[in-house]
Image 1 (tube, rainbow, N blue to C red):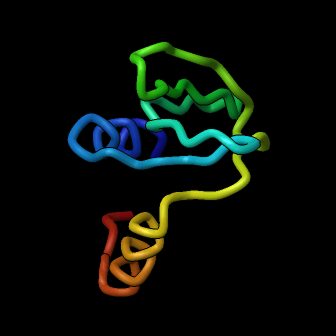
Image 2: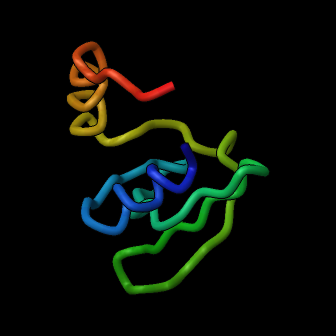
Length: 72
């Protein structure tokens, strides 16, 4: 699942707010570490629990999961 999320992040800009700063979410790993980049291109490492808010566009994807059928 993490691999699929990282593939999604390669093609889409998902923004996250940490404290008062918005970052582009670049990568997530199984331990809960995320890598983000700021508007100046600087890269930062945070814990997923540091995220205060996701870009509202991310919430639109939530509605799509109702119609997705996975292979078991």
